[in-house]
Image (cartoon, rainbow, N blue to C red):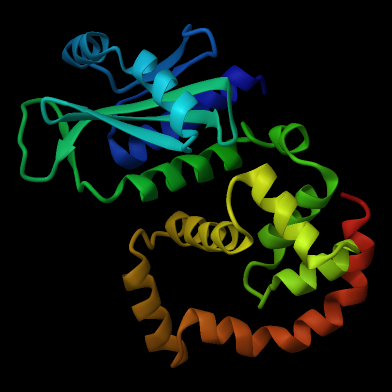
Length: 246
């Protein structure tokens, strides 16, 4: 499947999950695809010149996604590749906050966009639009660390453990990980867990924790710590072998 088809597939799934209009633009501003847009939406987008505003803010702030609001109407722009604008840009919206009714425009809670972006990333990963980018974005140590996080997120992963498996110092690992991903090890681990929770229907972290505690009589964090020590020990030799193939 071509890169464009993967982007279209991602956008189609995203729209039917959220009913938020979404566009994708290439690096040079060329339109890749549109989902859920009406003529009114098109006029709002063109009037606010969202793409140019995003590019300017991205150059200054380097955030994964940027929200732009004009006259209570909001748009959120996020690079198609989480770490580079070179692959193009998703533009989500228009939308307004809950309680701010404007005919023909979707309402969304003001604090939910971080979760909506996580959903978009999760759909994008399952559609394959990010599968080749990890080799372009990261060096071998960070790539191997991300492999561990994705496949062992349920265990009590620590910086000490991963740096030992990589054969590098903890200080050096923290330095290159933050430099290449723009985030700390703990942030990436928590985002991975949140993405998985969202993908199975828990779009509220507090609700997920409450249900988990009710079933297991302990929080997810305590459960992960209590059930991972033996498994980490048993997997150490196997992981040393696996990590060398990444």
